[in-house]
Structure formats: structure tokens, C-alpha cells
Image (cartoon, rainbow, N blue to C red; front, side):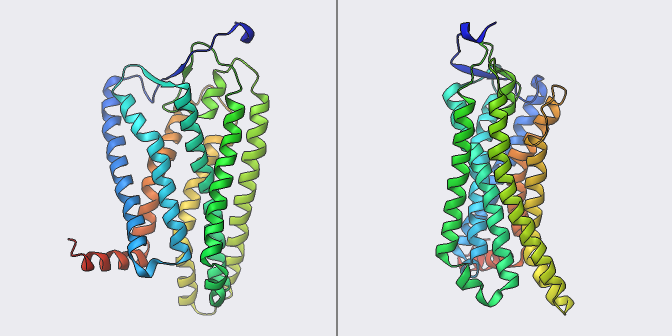
Length: 311
């Protein structure tokens, strides 16, 4: 069939994670439980930071936005996935697909930049603790966060504008459980070379900027920690970075597995499992990392419980 004679349909059909109805019932329950705890965990982190006076610092300002992004991008995917588990035909309109792609892609790219900003924050806190408050002023923190959102959603809009300039076969079946760029490329009847170039350029630029900032920051953090004489001081300095390092490791390892590898027709199941981890599990894990492994948050939660008589 020639693209020039192609008549586009008005919706895409999602294959979902599995075609076995008995498994879909189990997955519905798993996704629902994960989503409930993700909402509770991230809303809990946001509320704790807003209510606790000891958490009104630049680091927790960034953590608050990280929690909002995690909550936002899992909400873009999970409720629709839950609804699709109950349907025999999992359809999504082209406009809804485009909206999902813009919001999800923008949120994920914004998180790239936000994690880089958090690494810079940790660098200043450890290398220049006496100047930390003046360097990481509220104006600087707001600038870094706003810049992260702007760069993230601009990047996403560029990708989507190129993506929806393609023509698609009338049998618009996406082998995935949500709209994502690589599965859409597979059903395009026009050449996707330019789209891959755009992804490599803009996605690569984002990765280079963010990873370079993170690696540079942690190299100098490590050198600074090694220069501290007392073991207690080294442990204290390192403890302020462990939560961020854990989030960075989870985020980038999954991101690279998802997007920075050649597409393969034989790895659809693995692609979906990676995407489940990326869209459903990580937003649940991040608040756990920043609560269970963080004494400041634990102290703040106890104070809030005591103040408002919550049990």
C-alpha cells in the first residue's frame, strides 16, 4: 500500500501488555495497588515538605517538584491503562495519543533536567556549605525549576510535531499499552529516518547536558568527601547524596534501556516490562527512597503527626 493513497483512521488500537484476559485481571489489581501507593507516597512527600519548617531548603524544593513530576507522569499513563484492562478493544484517539505523548515526554525530560539541578545543588552544599544559602537562593532555585520545565516540554513538542507529520497505516495497531514513540514508528508508512535523527540530536543533547552535569557534580563531590579528615564528616556528607544517587541510577538505567538502543522486533515483551517499571514502579520507589532513607523527612513527619494529632 502506498502512503500517497493511504486514508488515515481517527484512532489507534493498543495491544496492551498481554492478550490473556485472566492475566489482565491480575495486572489491573497490581497496577491499581501501585497507583494508589504512588499517589499516597508522592502527595505525602509534597505535603510533608510544605508543612515542615525544617524542610524549607533548596534540596527539598527540588524534591517536591520531583514528586510532582512522578505523580504527574504516572497519572498520564496508569488510569488509562487501568481502564484498558477492562476493555476488549483498547482504543485511543489520535488527539488523545498526541496529548499523552506531549505530557509524558515533557514530564520525563523535565525530570532529566531536574535531577541535574539537584546534583548541582548537592555539589554546592558539600563544596561551599557556608555560601550554600546565598548561592542556591530562592530565585536561583525557581530559575532552575522553570528552566527544567521549559526545556523538557519544548523538547517533547519538537519530537511530537515531527512524529505526527508521519502517515500511518489504516490498521493503526500499536504494540504497547500506551502511546510511545518507538511503537508508533513501527506502524508508520512514511520514512522515519528524520524522526530518529531528531531523537538522537535533541534526546542526545538532553542526555549529554544532564549526565555531564551529574557526573561533573559527583566527581567533585567525591573529591571533596575524600578530602574530609574525619570519617564521621565523610559519612554525613555522603548521606546527603545517597537518595539522589539512587533516584538517578534508577531513572537513567531504565531510560537508556527504553530509548537509547536500536529497535528490535523480537523484544516487544521486554520493552513493555521496562516501560511498566519506568511508568509505574519508579514513581512509587522515589518517595520511598526520600522518606525511609532520610532522617530529616522522618523527623518532619513525626513533628507533623504530633502537631496535628495524627495517628
